[in-house]
Length: 405
View 1 (tube, rainbow, N blue to C red):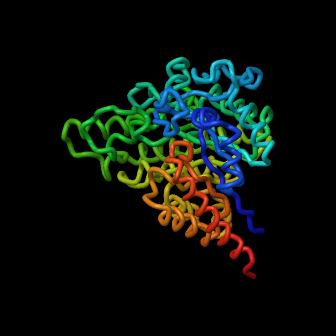
View 2: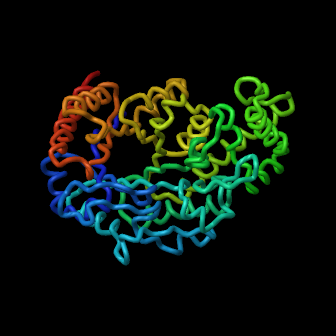
View 3: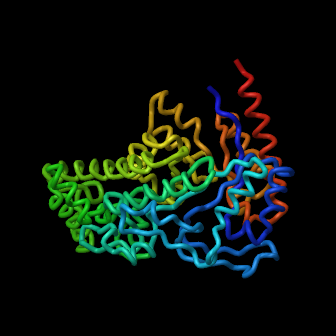
């Protein structure tokens, strides 16, 4: 069955409400022609200039937080609690947006950034990832930690039972890229040598390894030795930091399988408590200059894709889609990828309406039917006309493709 065409405008709540909720949604539904809205329920650090003069202050900045009012009962099984953004005070922007979308019959999908959460790591230090040297990440919650798993599942229950939404896009729900483990840390060797050292070796991961009969000390030793050798200018282990013995190789491989199991269990816990479809978000834009992080892709595919309903790709092009399709392999899995929602951005990524229309139409021709137009809230107002054109052309291509025998 061919999926129906849907176009979503991503407009963040901190931009949407000052711009005028009713007027903005009327314009998006009536003039731009989108089928739905995408907003962040939780987000990473926000630091943006708001182009519409009605918004004050013009520059908004807040740390990673929840942009709705959480229901405490949903998090009873965890010691972690969401931290709400200061700007919402006692209001509930998500509740207002839900009602406004229902009035206009607009679909609503929300994005939840889960494990990249420096404020939560600072408050709940026991839930942080730890590297091979025992140093805690200042930014990352560990997906293998039972309290983190219950917190994430509670978040999904909260969003899908208390709000009439269409879909939840789950973002940052794995161990994350190596560069995000210690954000901004200076280290004088290449990432190929230090990356194994930032695999998580926290107490929860160590306990899981012990229960599975995996020699976690051998895996940690291999990671430490590779980095120490590089810093000492000694000959590094084979292939930029690989294990030095068969025993270490076995331990390292088994430990990576445990990482994938932890991500799978996290997604499964969220899926059990979800009342709406869950889409896993994957984006490799930040990794392109450093090459593809295949370990993270494997964790994402086994944990997220095979548990969730589909994928949302945080990418300005179809490159992420191709990487994921290649990694999946097999016609059955490619069928799942076909229901992926590529994200295209009118600003600042696209230089012209022609470029935005071409990118969107090309994806529609290849079979994609769900599109998220990102950054609409911070785009100069005239670029929403670009989105209107892109939606019109992509919808036409999608209709033509559906009509073919």
